[in-house]
Picture: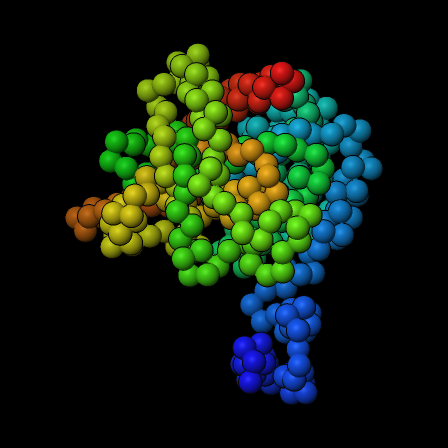
Length: 333
Ligand SMILES: O=P(O)(O)O[C@@H]1C[C@H](O)[C@@H](CO)O1
């Protein structure tokens, strides 16, 4: 029996209704068509995402050059104060009106794609993102990145709220992400899993240069100009599936692995962005300190995450605004 028919045999056992005749002589392609057991990302083809992009393009009279993902640390989940609200000439699309788009499922979470100008630069912001813990597979959480690519962006700015593992970090600090640990990928869960469409990018993309070194240097300069240098760090982010916060033992392990912040997003978005050759800049807002001992009785919670986001709202907006200006200047050189 070939490898493929063995896999299909397993699928037959899992989904009893599958026709056993299909076990014979299947090619890889037919296998994906008929028997994708873990994922159906083959339905989100280049063509269907192009439909999404053309729906948006028809209604937006300018081409965004930078995509910005506003997470919990950047006001995505309260009504005012998100960077997306500060854009000039805003055009907003609730996620539910956009063809093929997932919906934000968490109660109270705003989900909108917002187009507009930030310091004169055309951008598109995701006000709220999709998380694995909402029940979406990773490729679906990250599909808006491909849509933004099709809309014409060249750069992606990704923000997240995260727990600070590095003992030098304080609540309210910002960590520029220089690298990540794709922990879910260790278990074979990856947004690029499934058939690869070369029009997006290669089957085996590199990730050692995922985060733009140049933009990290520029962001540090911006931080100095804004007198924020004391709250800026550089480090490694790791993403777990959530929604629970981590145990003490898990955090100790992550710390030993070299993670400086822990969150529930970003990694799959960045992998998808690098796959389609976007330049990436990402940062974590430290909304809580990870508890790595058994004596501490307090618990991390989503409310403090939101509160710290609100506290840093204006600083982060200014920071991102300045980075957008730098990117636009570089692009025009
Ligand atoms: O969407 P991000 O990664 O910014 O938000 C983090 C992860 C969870 O969604 C939430 C936990 O409080 O914050």
